[in-house]
Image 1 (cartoon, one colour):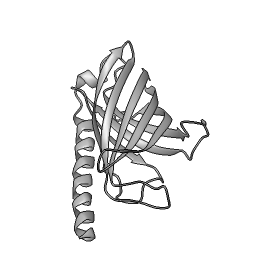
Image 2 (cartoon, one colour):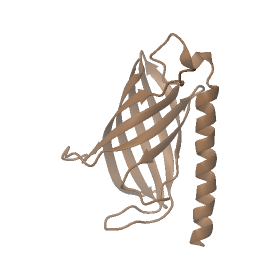
Image 3 (cartoon, one colour):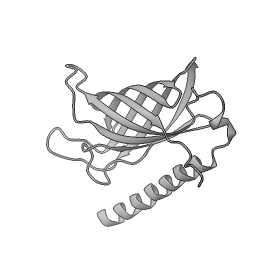
Length: 172
């Protein structure tokens, strides 16, 4: 059962990564417009989580996020919080709020419980991001929720992100 689950997850993750790669190469001129405060594109993220109540910093990690024209997003996070294969890529939506500011929400599946206590429970991770873009750099303030399979809150999360836009490779 578990090996079938792992194979299924690997196929889904591979297809999503392929879609993200294709999207980054097929991005049209609108994504590279003169409006350098556009969110559209793929970004490398440095994520600094913290305890929401005390503000105490937690171990940093990296991630990738692609914001597609039309308002969808895909994220991949490389946090040591997750066991291999435990979290699906996040899928969500984003919108422009004002000037160079945006807001997004995304969900990712947590496929199985982990330990040690308190650990994560099978369910969903929901992230809400307030995003500010400055040319090829961005900042994100994130709040998150881990929900169990019944939709009950297991833990709330907080983090600050910095990001750098991935650019087209130079032609030789």
